[in-house]
Length: 295
Length: 249
Image (cartoon, helix red, strand yellow):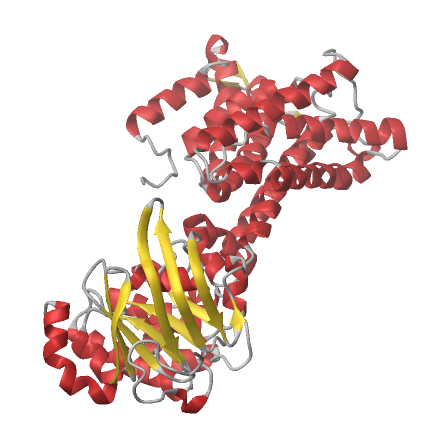
């Protein structure tokens, strides 16, 4: 059997894949956080709850309406996005003039409320959600066996992340977003309806979390606490990448997933804390993050 | 009061027509600090009007309060006979009023061309991108580089050019020559004449009195958040000495 640094190749590849899967979720979630923070200056602590909401929306669509995975992949992010827009419009908007801490406290409270509500109705044990028919089974790549659904998760998240990046960097809507991130007042003085832009942006960031939730449903179980388990790492990813940097959030997400996976192979004891160790080092050497601009 | 000059009531401006921009008793606050104490001014269609005054007398504040960038304000601002005091900020530009801030507001994360295309077109009659590139060939040359890589003078031209695209009928222009070399100031002056030939009205805040004297039709002098004088370009020679004292030149 082929060995690399004393580790069998299939084991190494297996952990790399696990890392890449986790990295896909990190990237999708930290991308949404970065977009929201960039424009609204809100640290969206409810992001994990929206991810959970996406997974539960998929599960409920199947359980109560008979709508399967592919339908849920479109509908669940829409539901989460609309919920996010309603919350921005009705509540979050009132906090913009205040200290950023209020936005953080509000979204933290919102996360507790959402998770508590779902725990009340569904408990903490988690509901199973099957992968769609077309993506069951596995493909033998020669050096490893790749479960089809996991390959799909990595591919889908890459496409979504790169698509989002392209929309923000290459289109005129993205130009509004970038300009408003720099100076929202001036963009509004040019005649752009910035309040609507803020609502849509928050909804879009939440919808990205919702997509991640649907993608995650067949991989992990659908449980009320699935978001809070993940979100702490995601915040570390955002800090490492640099608050508000779009590309930074994506690249750092995948990178740290892979680092975590490799750590499980070579030094499993450290796998759970390696992200936070990297965060501490980055904060010491580059406080603005790897891709952040000093301000 | 429409059509008469609020301070001097001398030579009739605007040939008896109502002013395009009419500001009456405008007050504004920065937090608790009372910055404007009842400003009156008129800009008639096609005019270039300059606000003169020392640093900190409220010239920039006047522009920002007219535009609605300062929300804590009182009084009346009418643009083309329509009150704009209660409009949300993004609706003000849509009435045909453009704003070029003192710091120019060129976006670093946008290319030169994206900066140029950013302000939405609010009315017909704006310049086309081709026309703009015709007047400013260096913007065309550098259209893919980040907006803030341009020199200060180029940034100022970009800041004005992008408003020309939108079809606004009046521009509020805050200190366009600040910190620029004399050659560039010359070019900005030529540019303002182009605006004028297109029929745009300009309300200009300017420290550079000699620059303002060459392009303005009418002047207001501010002090301590109030208008203290108003005169047309024809009266300028007679006022020069008094102005030098008032402006501390």
